[in-house]
Length: 528
Image 1 (cartoon, rainbow, N blue to C red):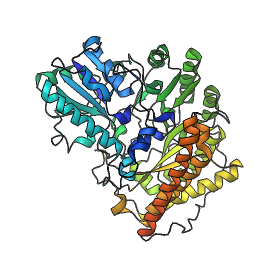
Image 2 (image 1 turned 180 degrees about the vertical axis):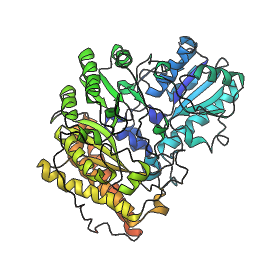
Image 3 (image 1 turned 90 degrees about the vertical axis):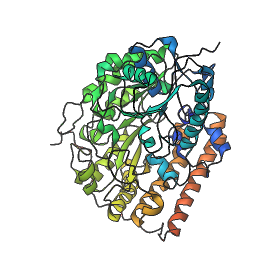
Image 4 (image 1 turned 90 degrees about the horizontal axis):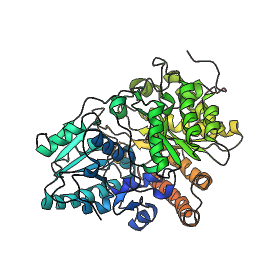
């Protein structure tokens, strides 16, 4: 029997897909609907399971909102976390709020802007979000609830909130104020746009009470490196104690989820003590994974995001973690670090703390040495590079293209085999942080930026061809349908980029000279 409730929490369908559990395939949601046929997208975006419309595993953000409401006095029977395809089953006159958690609702994120020609095309994230909003607005006419939107992508809706007829847009962390916030929404006492400028302490962030997609658990909030372009750096760094992390892992394990995705803005900054040089607190990082491993003996445990410098600053860090994670030739650990740029000028201007404990001038060497350390310990880094930072010169972009070419050459020589990494070129997006226009690939492309994008995708195509089978589940559909499609698709994308560059007057075959760098094995001495 379907229960009708006071508060319904949901999200759009791009965030309730497991994308066949293929690493990085969730970025398919950023693809343009005009270029990727719906039948291909539908084949690849397999949806999370549900029970009568209730999500069995839910995105972590929804589980945090659910837990916060319960900690603020709302009763369990008053709240549901619903699959977006079946959300109408839980709504009637008793429903006061339907809340949508967002990530990239208008396709203005860095990946979507790059894939959709600066927003001229429509990403699947935008299509699915707008369809959900349209469905809920029809239900609101009948039942009169408040439509509330929040989450990491809520900044994208500031200029669209009235046109979309959203009752309330919430921007910021809410765990410490959500009870008062929702009750004020119910009573009609809040403005349309609500900015939460304070941050909850770790003690005010409740632990999840329902299982999460991929067994995801959070271990810290914020980062602390204070990169000017990055919205998470607006959040003060806070670290969960291990007991709190184990409590969340336990929720997933009890639901039969035998894996844990360890989420953070930068896992190597967990319990950082050296805020001047950012030398990692290696013992605490290792203790975190060791404790989870010894407590639950999960067959799969993986961090989400990291930086590069700590693995070079302390060469013992990755070997110690790799032993715990059982990394090896047949089990690589995926990680998403930010490479961003090879330009020391841009590093110094926007992200001076990113290379620490090294200098901005040392950054290209740190990236190469870090990739060597990752690969030597069976870690596969999926780097991001930002295209179009404010003030970026053509030479700045060319430096990053040269770094990619240099990584391919030097690392292959050093490792004795092909290096494993990708660099995903992302369009600069202000994200309500830097008050500057976003990068438009059509209007703002230069030769250096084109060559950066082209060489990044050239390497991605190589990795899809050579490495994808090693990191994807070995199902019949994946091996004999998805893998050939992926190989074909990556080369089609590369050809489209190549043709686009030629149309703009650039030569994709122009030699890109490797950087002249002195590369040495990482020192075991602490950098000053």
